[in-house]
Image (tube, rainbow, N blue to C red; front, side, top):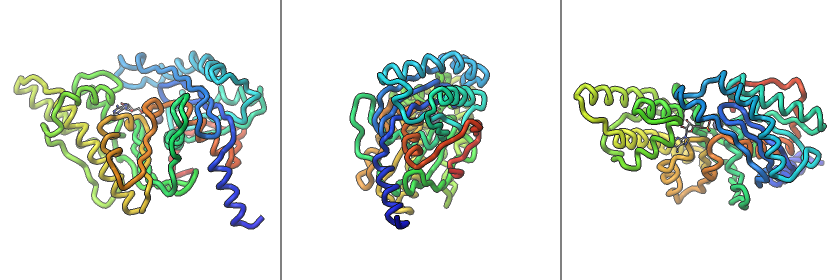
Length: 356
Ligand code: KG4
Ligand code: ZN
């Protein structure tokens, strides 16, 4: 077969990745398992969230997270298979998050996947968590048909609790990282600011709720543009909110939490949106993809969805925060690209998307 027709047949396989994959995700504070068919259809999607457990610490406590994953992993995998009405023998492979994430949490999912692979002979696929977030945009909600698949090249913004990344996705599984945060991730900024304002954890949904009653123009918080780069920085914004809160407290004023939350959110959304649009224009993409926990934010979704010049892909709300369906989806595409990992596969806690 000529090189060109080989490439074309690879492309057909990736556009139509016929496979049933079990996904397992334990990189942070959700223990999750899901079965996905053909990279796009969710047959089951089980998640056990630990966020109530971590709320009292105001963030994820790694030791508590890994112990909870150990308790939840077997029942969650069992639930995912039962809800899909499938046995391991009906599947093609097992995809598991290898990284980035908390080492003690990642190994729980990886060991579960290895055990299942040893027992079943299925293919083992180690998946990058950020790639998983990208592939969440290929999925339809459970029980629903997926929408139009994103087309390449596309500009992707991944915004989560641990990451803020701008990525040019040139084709299936082919990435160029354009920039990322130099300090706090977008979700981390939401979580830290929520704590500062006396709101609960996780901070993103709390800030969003408080902001609904507030004026986004009430405080002129800084935007860190870092000219000519696609990097981000949110630590200056966090400090500006802290200073404002301290000043108001000194004046014994009642904290205008809604206005502070709305103005903070406006600043984050403005920077994320503006930089993404700039990159999409520079790289001449027609498609924009926004994924990760912060893509659940209504202000961010509204701003991107209003774009007429681009096809905008944002996963359904249930697939924005960590889940295993996105890992299984990425696993389908990797399975068809020929990836097979062996039992030596180790966790990769700092795995960058640039290394894919
Ligand atoms: O993707 P994710 O579940 O986990 C990581 O991979 O980090 O993202 C979690 C992050 C948290 O920081 C949370 O506060 C944020 O996503 N988040 C939101 C919203 N829902 C979740 N941030 C802003 N607005 C939301 N509605
Ligand atoms: Zn995530």
